[in-house]
Amino acid sequence: MPVEADLATAAETAEFGARLANVLVAGDLVILDGPLGAGKTAMTKGIAAGLGVQGRVTSPTFVIAREHRPGPRPRGLPPVALVHVDAYRLGLTGQSALDELDALDLDTDLTDAIVVVEWGEGLVEKLAERHVSVRLTRDPDSEIRRVVASRVESVVT
Image 1 (cartoon, rainbow, N blue to C red):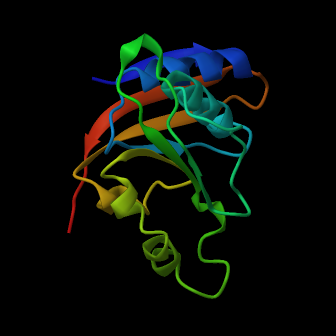
Image 2 (image 1 turned 90 degrees about the vertical axis):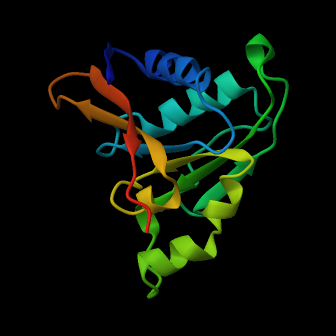
């Protein structure tokens, strides 16, 4: 069943991400979808805070992927690393987006990390049997963001 919420600020978006982190475990794939400015990176910062990972979380737009080592996780949950991917620029180098994605070896990271992919819808679902879909939308006349999060069974080939 999807979880839906209206988020008025970037802080509320991060708080939602921190709560989401409480149900994530190593091997989870989280796909963030939404237009520019919808709050995908703010959501990832919240997930990172909820996981207690080390290092400052910034958008990996130009480096494509950034790994954050595990730190002490709140609430006594087992520590887990976070791999933060921005798929927005995949395919712009002359290689296909799928080839570039394959070169990142994200399926290897899925065994012992939580992988969060911004702009990954339609591209990374094949990496796991199920994933968490987080859709963020924003009314152009408002700062309020709408989030819908749900677990989705993936078609793995």
